[in-house]
Length: 312
Image (cartoon, one colour):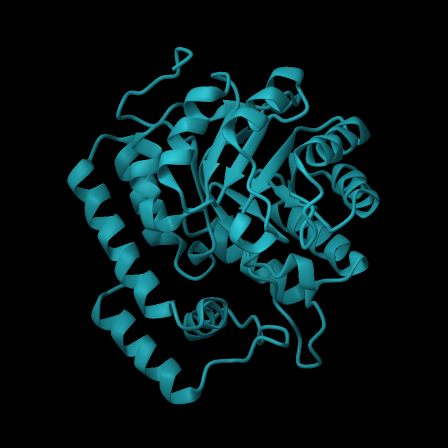
């Protein structure tokens, strides 16, 4: 397995080549994007959400991903989100900005902007909707990597993009330095394990599937990027920290609680996060159409169950 550390303890987060030695590893929150009453990106609400995250256990932020409705935002909105998140962290948390678009030129534009804004790294979806083939996907990432000096991560979520990056392709791009890491949301634990075994030890592998978060880390992943942590970061922090410290019963209990949480929000996951945050005093507005806010009765039932489970 190329000497990859397979101990049950999480590997130390991999250091990125920046003067301040920022790290990617542990719990990263895939942030939702707050909107105002007119449905526009709301920087003030977003800054408040970042402060909430910072004080509740997240170890890094991943804006403009799937949970953040990145593909539904305009280029200017995505730049606003990146700038707001980076400024609101005040240098306390590393930020990996998701910049992937359907085309390479727009992805490069957003990557350059993220670097200028102060991002620690960028992540890019595979070009989605179309299926250009593995060679074209590799050329896409090469173009993004050449455009910036900060690390470039792949973001693999084939159920949305239609393009699944195979471990051998990731390993090839790791070898050339095109990629420095990946967020894998393939929902395929065996593929993730194959990936961990294929890449160099200093390549960052972040798991994006919460349902097997604990088992991914115990298999050698550097951490978890969680959309659910937008709403209840403390629960996901408990999983990561407990596992890191060798408290496996606590880590397993957290994983089971995460599964209960995921089952509760499954019908309307993104809309549910807005409702949970509102209940917790962090108003992020409503999700952007075509997503609908939760029906009041459904929201109240969900919140009541979360309280009974002591998750909020």
